[in-house]
Amino acid sequence: MRIEHAVIMAKTHLSSQMTFLSGSIAGRNYANLMMPSTKENFRAIDGLLFVEVSGTSDYKEQKVAVRYLAQSNQVWRIDVSDQEVRELQAQKGNLEHILAATPDTDEIKRNKLQYLINKAKVDLEALQISKGLNQDTNLPWTKDYLRQTDFYYDANLSVLHVCLPLRNVNGGYIWAVLDASKLDTIKTTLINEL
Image (cartoon, rainbow, N blue to C red):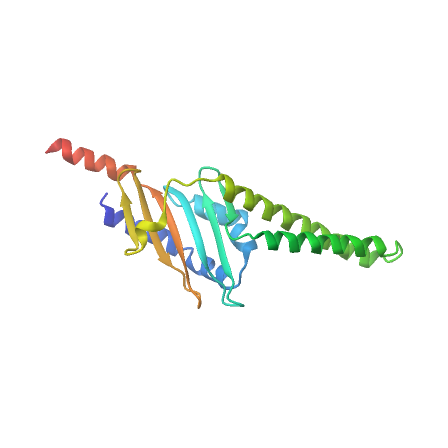
C-alpha cells in the first residue's frame, strides 16, 4: 500500500463523517460529538488511533473541540474552562435551592426541577471527566507537521496524519492519526528485495 493510497482511504472514511461533524461544530452540539454512536463511527475506521475535531461554531462563534483516542475508546472535550465548570456548578446549586423552596404539593414543578438538576449533574460530570482526560492524556503525536500539507507520514512512529477542513461557515478541521505499520512492512519488503 502506497502512502498516497492510504491517504485517499483515510480521507474517504473521514469524509463519510464530514456532514455530521461539521453540523455538530456549527451548532456547538457536544451531545452529538460525544455520544456512543460517534465513538462507534470512529472505531469503525480501520487503523484509526486518534481524532481531533475542532472548529468555531456558526452561532456565537464559540470554539468547539473534542478528541477521540482509540486505545481508551474515549471522546472528550478539550476546550473546557474552569469558568464553564463554575457556572454549571452555580446553576446546579441554584436549581437545588429552588427545589428546596418549592412546596411538596407542586409536584410538576418539583419533577421539572429534579430533571434539570439531574441533567446538570450529568453535564458537570462530563466536564470534569474531560478536564481530567486533558490533564492525564499525553499524546505521542503533534499536529505541527500538518501546517503546510494535509497529510504526513511519520516513519518513526509508523503513523499517518491526515487533516481535512470542516464544511461549516466558520470552519475547523478533522485531524486523524492512523496506524501505518503496513506501509512500513511494504517498505521493509521492498528494501529486502533490492
